[in-house]
Image (tube, rainbow, N blue to C red; front, side, top):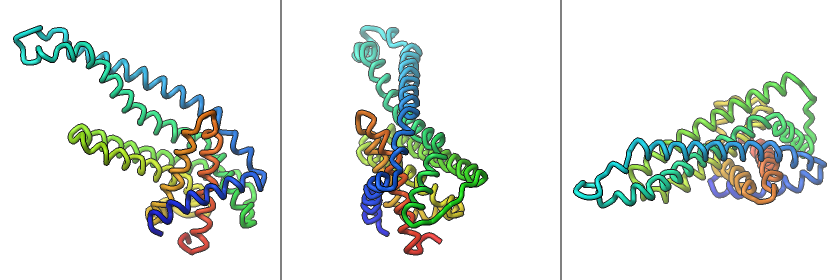
Length: 266
């Protein structure tokens, strides 16, 4: 499956899943993540904003631009800029960096905390779609939770590696930000999609290594699922909080079932 075919197939399946949530009586899942996400998002944004401001102030104090002579020194001409605007600029630079860090952290934290819920939703969608019955097993639920946490942590760490590399590259070659920025967005979509697909991989006893290979063969599919999740999360008035996670899980489940029918997944 090429990238764009998989990408738009994932989007289509997510909207099919939206209808399925109401047709099959699964709509209560839309409300579970709203309160938890809001609390974590607001808390992390506030925390990292405070850290960014303190770092910028500390850097300004250490550099001590006030000590630059008003004339006769190499940097005298730039003293007004350093003393008036440097701290403000650095504050916003750090805030932007920490925004990426905090949004990524919060995104995966809710995936970890709500992993049991998303696993149950994925299982329910499969049962309602093809009649496959999965009797409740506490042992299996614990395995699903453990696998979900491991995969979320793995994907979060890998995404942070990409963010760090991107930050270093843009510091060295600032014009490359126009390329690296969109690539980081694609990376984020991919790892979110992978996390959503993995609820199905675990339920069907597919190992992590094989899950990675399957997802890599269907990068467009994973990115499409992550795209739906990310776009909906930006909707106002809690609409994104209601629909984003549930639609992504639904889209991932329907996409997995299609892959299985085509014998892509064994």
